[in-house]
Length: 110
Image 1 (cartoon, helix red, strand yellow):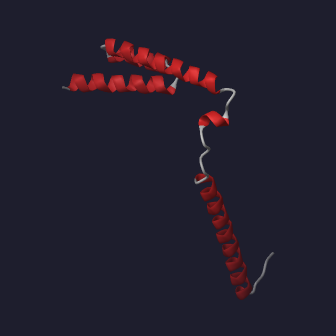
Image 2 (tube, rainbow, N blue to C red; image 1 turned 45 degrees about the horizontal axis):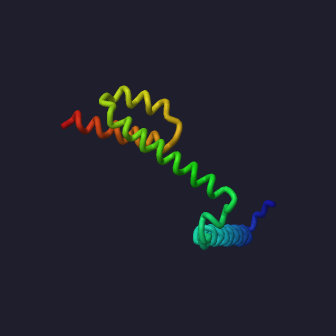
Image 3 (cartoon, rainbow, N blue to C red; image 1 turned 180 degrees about the vertical axis):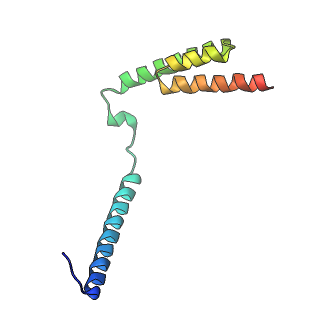
């Protein structure tokens, strides 16, 4: 708990540092093993039952994004795009809208 001997304090501090170093090494090894874990053979094998359904949803999302992209090309004001951006829920939608806003602003600058 409390000691007045300086040599003993040094030994205690060095023991604590050694324990902390070992703990850090263990944490790094754990992270490395998780980071470089081999990938599974395919997404289809991971979830065979839901794969057709997820594939269908992904195709629907791609179609919706394509339609949104066409709609964005028709819009010519930043204000309208900003309204769409605030109403958008999906990340990909917001990403497309932000790109359209940047494009319009670049055209205004030119």
